[in-house]
Length: 311
Ligand code: FDA
Image (cartoon, rainbow, N blue to C red; front, top):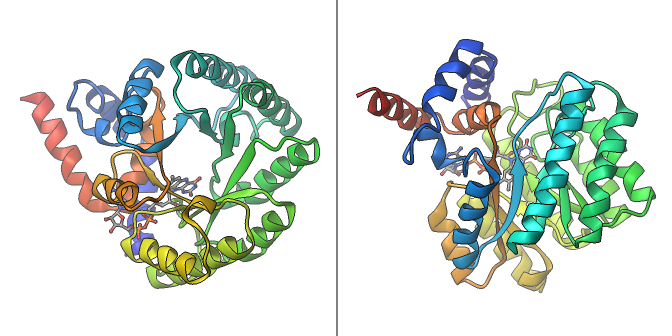
């Protein structure tokens, strides 16, 4: 069931007609169904959402949505959008923290170009004190994402971090690899459809892996981010940190925009650092479909949203 729902929504995410339908209705009005998960299609809407989060004591990272670009021009356009985003965020006074994906910057076209594009973003980001997190995509990209990360790390960029997925069998080694570098890791369960050759298929196995890796990161990592909405994972993290006398300012929690806002508020009230991942932009469909795949009950929002729009 855990892997099954992801597989169905992954297949649907590749449907051009569903994408057209969703794009028409999903963000059309103030209360359209995709707005629960996406802060808006423009940077101005994202900043407005970010301000509201900041006023509630939440930290944030902004993600300009996009992935799997097919041409150099598209990759360059996404790069320029990120550079523009940095300028706009500096002017807005919003927290300086962004997340991005390598397939957005052209990793499928040419690795050297992708590294150049990432450097084009990291330069102004470093100058303005931004932290840049590289999201982790599906398993064909794991090794190349780590390799690109290490290339930039060797070039002395220290304003970067990476995400690692607990569902992959390989991740314990990758956590150790990043811990040795002293790099900041965001630990997630993993959002893509992966086969049994590379990934755990049962929720219980993924959760057990998440807990092992959380401990490895708290013990030996550099300011790790524990990114989950799972209450069992959250309380195990808090308990382990307390037991090891790791102060709450040596790590942070992260959650996605619009998911478990009650838990987000409770963590802030409890004195923990809680960062919200705020996605925005017109290319929201694949991100949105992954959120449905994680919790098929969310499909109810979509159906109600579409019916509501048409009435
Ligand atoms: P789990 O899926 O077990 O859910 C636990 C509970 O959380 C559910 O019972 C429900 O209450 C709530 N919940 C979870 N997902 C929900 C949803 N979509 N809608 C409503 N409620 C939901 N993945 C990846 O592969 N690469 C990446 O780079 C990132 N980056 C990232 C950043 C941040 C800040 C977060 C929080 C997550 C990611 N992810 C990710 C996604 C991650 O891999 C995972 O798919 C989701 O976080 C859902 O898993 P949980 O840990 O929440 O547990």
